[in-house]
Image (cartoon, rainbow, N blue to C red; front, side, top):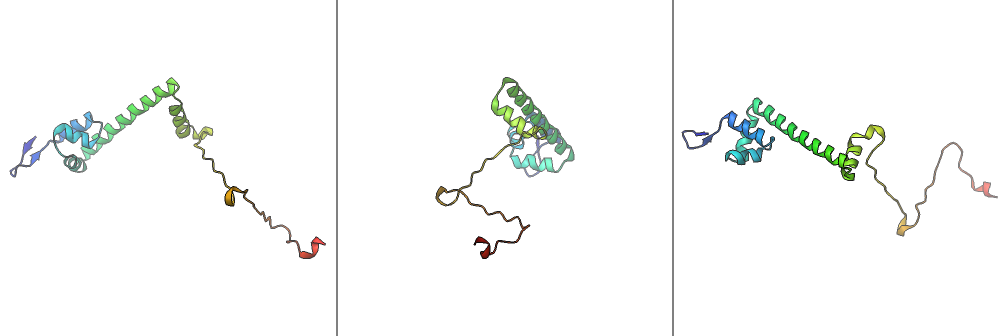
Length: 129
């Protein structure tokens, strides 16, 4: 870090990159690590294709770590983890999050439906005789 002519701290791309790697791409944590504001790190990152790539790679490593932890929980038999995996990754095998919805009429009475198939004429009043 250095300062420019008006006393503003200047950081190197290398400093920002290392902070992003250590904090797995979390910009506020990277800022805390090097002693600046999150907006400073954001400005550096958004102004540098290299830092954008480093941040993306760091975030992917974070996701990899989370996947390993999820796998460990599935292997332990943690039902919430199992359900999460099946609902997200097992959809092609028929595992889907389900939602049950019940419908009732006024004051909890049954709902009445009328089905009009449309292939016959409606009954005329004379047909009831």
